[in-house]
Image 1 (cartoon, rainbow, N blue to C red):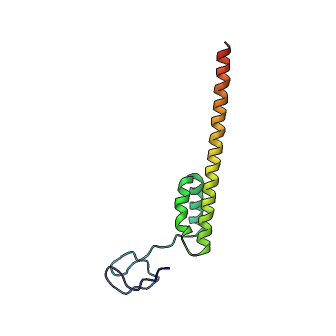
Image 2: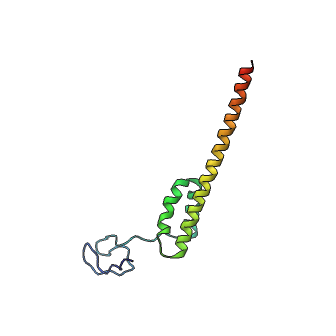
Length: 113
């Protein structure tokens, strides 16, 4: 685990370990953890369902967090993404099979004339 920054690497001003930015020069000291508010969770889950491949990408910052709540949010987003992908593949196969069946029936009618 990395040590907390006690000095800004750019301007060498003393900073607190809880600071995300240097108050003197504005340098980003470390990434802010993703939010686990109900609104941010709802947006993440909706995005995971509606835009499935991106759900895994959006879940990665949550999965990298040390606390279990963030990791749980990330895993739920991954599961919703996988379920959405499976549903999309199943529905696509159903449509393709239906179109294939209709085309085969039309071809048999055409050949029978």
